[in-house]
Image (cartoon, rainbow, N blue to C red; front, side):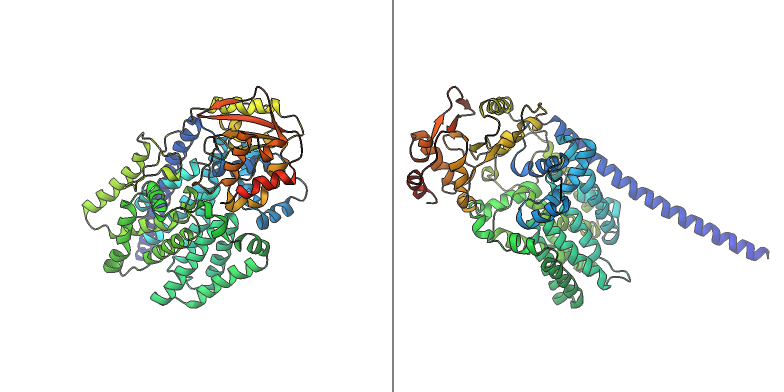
Length: 549
């Protein structure tokens, strides 16, 4: 009996020790994720609260929409309006709903908005990355931390207000479902869920369709090269196709099947421009280092899964560049695969110097973004390929915020209630989005709801069917010389309309300048015109032949 009691006591101690070890590991994992996220969150709050800039276009689109929804813009048949926007709008309300809910609870300031992106999207993404690290890396805590600090663009895109970081969460879920070697690895439900997630991803932001196609392509290559089961790919593809062709048919026909090559012709630059943008945010050293990972993993561990991540990125990049040039938000299509490759990278570390090199690269990539340097004003101003990320995570400061604020408030007084004012300026210095967002951006009080300020047709390849908006505007704010943001010849609508107002000819004959409003603003003149007569067919016939040359 004593012997049995001793054996039972020994087994009890073993179980207690194993349970204690498991608890310590869980606590260590929890603290790792919390500490890393706390660092990122603190950096984000400093960035936003100390910035003095004006958010516009992609930086502000979903902030604007979230505030509008929080203010009740979708009251009455809420779900129908959200669903309809999925099939008609490039920026649909679905992606705005989480931010709207957050801002309803915690306020509509830019600080609150970015805090919401970090907590709702980046934190869960980190949790899923750690889950992946446990599956893929021998040292999950180190691998997780290295992946975050080697790729500071993940945090920066959230700091910049891109709701697109929500896509990282969906992609990380797909990788967690696909990268598994337990007894459920070939269960069909995994791949059905992957297909559903890939559709939800592209509905969330339409350009993620490139990621979804590239992910399925990488799955196909896995079947060809490494004998993965074809039924898994078929299940993922079929579930995606069924969901698209039933629930999201309006999205398929109204958004996905557009001719984006023609639509974004004005936004298509050289491949060199893409490469300069990509290396600006990821550097050259990291991708080159990660290019070695599939070969090292195959040679040392017979591990071939890193090839999947590279196929996804290469296919995605080639398809996207055939359509348009990358913007910074589009880099979210590559961050998850780069993260996965960093996790695999930690497995091929076999020497102390390798460990030191990885730690050093993580530090350099993050710290370099805090070194003050002059930043390019737009993608065309990026003049070199960077070895390490050289974008800036220092708070942004714009010098003319007070002048723009004064312009907005003068417009408030000059344009009568019930009238709308179109903005004939499409540059990074002045556009309709800047005027609508100047007050909330710099935390100034809103003196008048800016919904009377509207955009006019700007880009030839996209807006050629919107000329009526130019002809029927009650007031037009004109910046001279013409303010554009694309290459010469891509915005003739703006160029020629400004020329008409400068010369007082054709369509401008129906407008009269508002006396006493003109002012200089950062090297150009701004004038306000009131429409005093209809723009006739003859005036239009003189104006329109000058467009789209």
